[in-house]
View: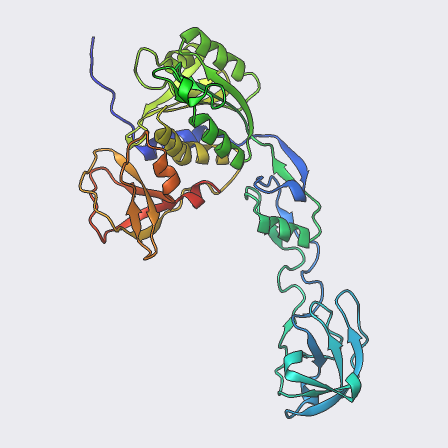
Length: 410
């Protein structure tokens, strides 16, 4: 029997195959705009009005005709006062209207002079204009932000706080969004203990606290998923099969941590294969080589490595875009920026490597000293990843591809 090892799959190939399987969920629902942050739009949002609805003042000051102020120092009678939320009469020639920010500009006026350039006289019944104004200054035009009939938010767009404000500005009290992905999460490993169950001084030899469960759940919630936490599954094939079979009943994705390597106690691979299929197995990245994708019945399955940094990095690079696309999001690509290295990395790896780094006060990148896949401190200390090609070394001053955690965890 052949003992040849199957070549590792590249990250790009693995991601492409993964994304080809991430068909957007078919269900959508209407939610209050107040509650739609992070959701993905299932229907384009079109404005039924101009924003602002009419010309209005962007300053506290005076509305007037430029033709009435030929020189600085001109005095005009104040004919009316217009506050935000009210409407003024047509402006009489040779007069000015006291106006406040957001108030509609009266017909006949073609400019606003800010109050700092004006001087009230005659107990406020008149005003001295101490500058020669320009036509249109300090006027926000109707439709300057949004025009009637314009599509302001696109189908497949992931909503942000600014998006919600924009939707509210055109009167949208509710938005049509795709259903949240339902994710079942569990960890495997007899060595795992939950914080609070056992005090540190009472930990048995070989036991460790289950850190992966905490950051994976948090990452899933940040992506807007509905998470069912199934806890820790014992290192037994029958227990793993049972957990997978139950999780497949009402979820879009089963996400596990641990048990995807090739040891005798790693039962995820045979358990998934007994219930469905396993499409991906190992990927040429560091950290994170043991990675599995498949299906349990009609439910997606992703198995992450047990080492915490490996699990963290593979989630960000592979699971995050998968879930965004499953959610109906059109923009899922990971964005990188060019930043200068302020460190040396002479130890090239044959795999594509993701180093934990952080930006310093000089605008460059510093490297965390210990890049082990078990050192979660590196992900807390760092504010992003450096993406190194296979065989790439780093010398101080090299410009590298940097992926901020703010990009990956938004």
